[in-house]
Image 1 (cartoon, one colour):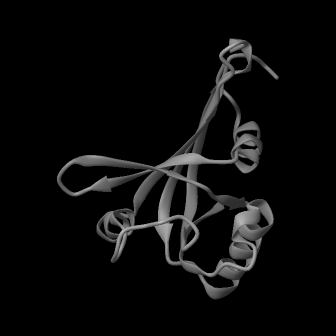
Image 2 (image 1 turned 180 degrees about the vertical axis):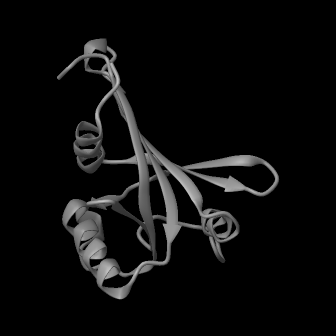
Length: 140
């Protein structure tokens, strides 16, 4: 069953992780796993130092500078009980964000993910949520 905006927002906000899709200039969709936080219609994804990364600017950042469109897909699977399946897709637009928004999102990330406590971020990708859609196998 299709989910309404409110239910999509609840599931998105509570999700532990998702897959961020950006647009690569030659190969099209570029998808990477991501952790994130949601504050109203704003979503933040960290570029952290906790998980190893390659040198230089990340491809997802280069993609967003060239094309600000993105999507984040979150889902829940229970292989033993398919009535619990759901997914939510957030359509996003990259936004540089202001300092207050970034500080608040960084604090929310540290509260949600204990690995970030006391750790600096290299960057914070800030997005405006422009649309939400979702589906669930049941009304729950």
